[in-house]
Length: 214
Image 1: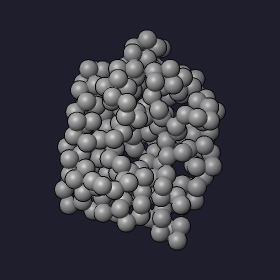
Image 2: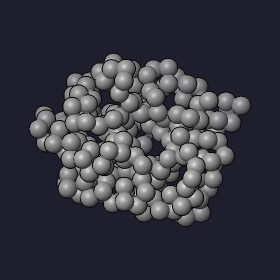
Image 3: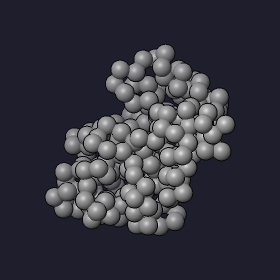
Image 4: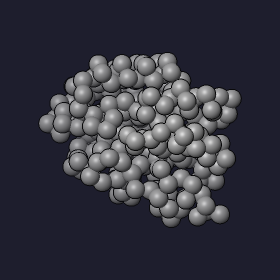
């Protein structure tokens, strides 16, 4: 079932409590892997999903990645305290593009430590990166102790592409996580991303994907 690979996502700034509650109800009904919500909704999601197999996932440094590393670490620690079980965070894109490897590696390592053993996904925002920068971002994620690389925030200039997912999988190897996110709205695209090497999908179109599967 594709549902077991999906992080059912609602990160739009205008999301309401009622929409978060519906997100969680859908995740329970369709047996999605997790729900991905902004920090202020972690408590709501945790309460609804308590005792279920659905994980609560949240974000840090989202969606720009250009705030300080300390701010990202604080967000991560706060999210874990509130009940998040995984963290998706945006690395500093400008620092990566200017070749500041030391800064990016230190930031990834710091966020991983702040997560206290919980899985961390590093969002590369691939639409803003060159081929070489995508590869370097993947190498840094692995070296920094993260658990996944992720294509996109869904708020940038572009989303996941099959070529990027294939490149990321080839770069990180078979045992590291690859999350495709951004623009995945139907079953055919979801299946293609999984075949290209993703082992997690982030999408707000989760229900449409599963209904298409049926």
